Length: 94
Image (tube, rainbow, N blue to C red; front, side):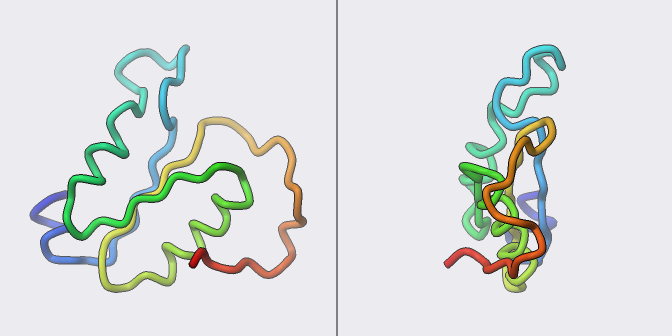
């Protein structure tokens, strides 16, 4: 990741699942260090959503960034409830 993507500022998107401690998946599959590791890289943009709408906007934002790598994480499991319909226009984050 460091030499093959970040230092070359390649527009690679890392979508990381199982954010944080995930319990029944076991200790090897938890994402306790994903944000910490990626945030240390000088060219990496790191995003973590607070809800499902922000996650949708993060994906739109990541798709528009073309000059550096992007990492965003999302929780394990299904989206329970959207506060806004999916068919609305999705604005990227600012």
